[in-house]
Image 1: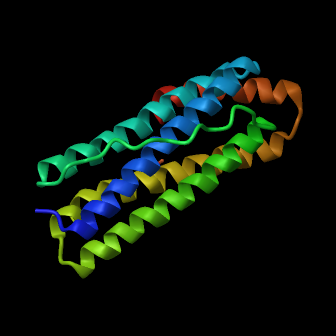
Image 2: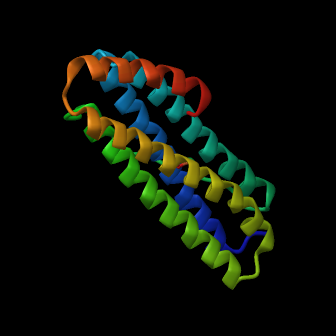
Amino acid sequence: MLSKTIESKLQSQIEKEASSSQLYLAMACWADVNGFSGAASFLYAHSDEERMHMLKLVKFINERGGHATVPALPKPTKEFETLQAVFKSILEHEILVTASINDIITACLKENDHTTNNFMQWYISEQMEEEQLARSILDKLEMIGSEKSSLYMFDKDLEAASKTHA
Ligand code: FEO
């Protein structure tokens, strides 16, 4: 049985994962209409992945005697400056999500909630991968700068990466 504190922390994590999914979907739309079809595929897939993260939490709460609430979400922005700005914002966002997952684990340890702690370990590994991936994409984009033919090639690489990572 979940304590009220843990349930409420998991609930706010649901909101963060759902917001991530919406944000990445808005980024995918921007990439799609700006000629970055590889980045768009990557971001559509990433958006789906965040929805799956949300759903896992929803099911966990319901299976553990709680009742998950489907959150209302703010509308994400439609406009982004550059592809580099998109991935910079993803990395910053994922760092915040990791901090929030760490906070849940700290609360689980305080309450001796080993079941939720164990469940949340999956998110820890997932965050490590996501931060690492966003960092490596951002590093490459920083090297490329605004050089069009390299950006084009990089976009093709993201198409391939979307099939393996996102
Ligand atoms: Fe599910 Fe990328 O946080």
